[in-house]
Image 1 (cartoon, rainbow, N blue to C red):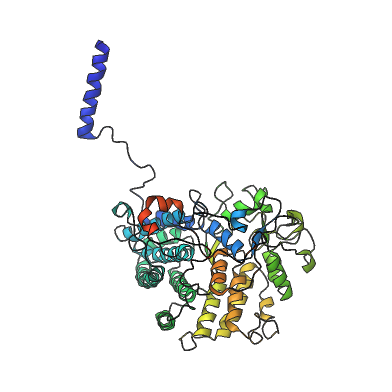
Image 2 (tube, rainbow, N blue to C red; image 1 turned 90 degrees about the horizontal axis):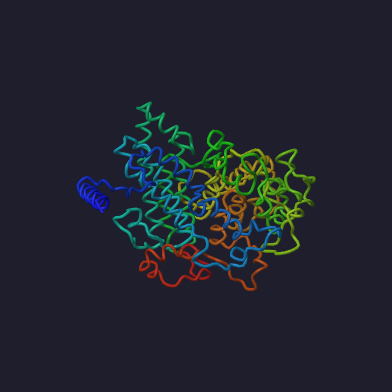
Length: 522
């Protein structure tokens, strides 16, 4: 009994002291880094944009789904057919990219909010560019999304949803702010060597080249403008914004793709190699992953490339049947002639095994190349967006002709895929429709089809978005589906419906086959 009394008195004493000195205050979030500086957060945010193992994979998984629904990839018959992807049997419990994207956005917002106080103002502009890019993709997946009340932490636990068109306009404003911040950051970096050292080590996209961030901002802005180019009543607004970009003088990304990482970023250690290589290619020891047998190039894409004589890109987009030659990485096991490239009908569930169909090719996967950068925007897309802008709005102040931008877009696609760019030049003046400018009666259709092609293997989500915008090219329906319905957007995820119920409910009933985004006018 005496021991019990002593124990109780001791416990009461400790409890009393806890009230005064928070002795037992151990409820600290171990995932919170109160001393993190913006530069470290920014580097990790760029990596997380491509791949977030704690969420749904961010761009890695979004591009995979887009590659399927744009008609470029399907699966081999070495696996049970995925009815969520190829039969469109999905619910709000599938394809939750929402949580990972907003988690990533919180990191960029942290950089924006804390850059000034930490003497790193030069990071504000790049962080705003990435914020705009991620929000653009969220709108293109879900339509109306939280924007004005989002990213405020505990201050707003149930943010309202903003109209998707209004979000797009806000992103243009955000990119204008980014351009101003980048200009100020360039002056700051030029005057301070220590700042340049920090930025060079932080920037895993451009290696500290602030001018390229300004060009990237303009390129993202052009994507957002061209995404809504078919919406009635938007022409004057779009033309004004394009002319503002041109007058700014920074230009656009050209001659290279915007990509995260590189030879010194990804290393041959588990969890630290390029996530595309890790998922569909090989391990850090170059052992082939089981999922290397999963994605297959569609019959439609292979046959379209053959019919157009575009075999140079075909041989970079796909491997010949038999897949990659393990003794000679980057080449096919079978002879690389057109007859040995065999596509799989979209959604086919039998008859197309891994060994007799064309796998994803060397433009994406080569054994031993674990350290390739992760592409987030291609120079080809930028040039083809410029081609569309000039073709639609002849009086905008873009300096080149629509034809020049179009032909440069095809050339940049060849370069990005690793094909000889002389092959692109060979299409100039040819009689191949949608390749030769003069031979293409519908110039806008040719531009759209080339945008779709340029995204193959590199940016599946943009391929799907371009397909939804124009309906081009006309791809076959999944063989798992008996009607003409195709997804035009995603459901709001059940996680958001559970935590922000009233605002999700206020969006009305979402029909993923008929509730189109504002820029999807057909």
